[in-house]
Length: 340
Image 1 (spheres, rainbow, N blue to C red):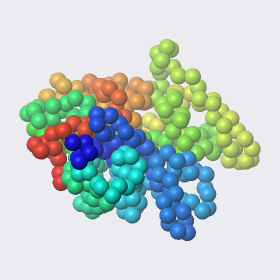
Image 2: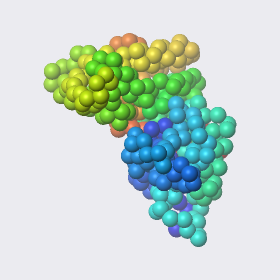
Image 3: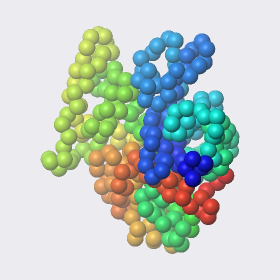
Image 4: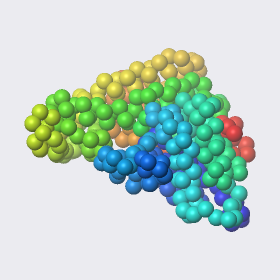
């Protein structure tokens, strides 16, 4: 049967694209594509393209087709998913194409034009049957919420380009918000902090490493949880000489505080719009955190204290969307939350 029909679940994220096939993840690559400047031929995609990104080769430029949860370049947005799908199927176009069924998780702020671009890309890759699901719904399914029950649940998915906040009940999104404040903005905060505080110029790749290694939203952690300071080497903005600094987790918590506060504020706004009965359910069921941003140290504790409702971080939060998309793929004939 697999010879004649194949099924893929895809998390088309701002930062990374993840593809699930036959019960496992077969592709997990950065959502970036590199082109040759003169011919506009595709040079690299995914991790190889990311390695090119900050090296400023005049012959090659890179594009992140999805920025802040929306499509920024439609031509690249068609080429990228098509290439990833082909890679997930073995890396070669074949004379005989098996029937391909795909469910794609898309950002909550996707427009009809964005959806059409995704449909076209999937069709070029050979998709015969295509469904789409909004990422907060997929994320909720991926953390284990029974979204079809007449019960209110809330998910906060802090991704690369957007933070998706949604109240879900009876297989639908009752209240939601998709804001362009997420991991990319936190990375920018770190780049700016190093420049202002230490006169050190660093790239976004280094800032990402700092965030992943010592990122925290609390200025005081228990001694046994304190990460080792991160040593940064960069260019002094004044002298252009090499400069070095040891960055601590509490510095990172202070420099990203304004961005985290904006996310807190948006969570409050969604809760204010939530119907009373569903609000009561949310208090009983807790609020789930997913996405890369939920891995910041202390984020569940901080949100719980600010909102006065318990927050819980999902198991393997980076893969919550693709897990939910894979489950939706299995239920595609009956699931009310899927769109064609």
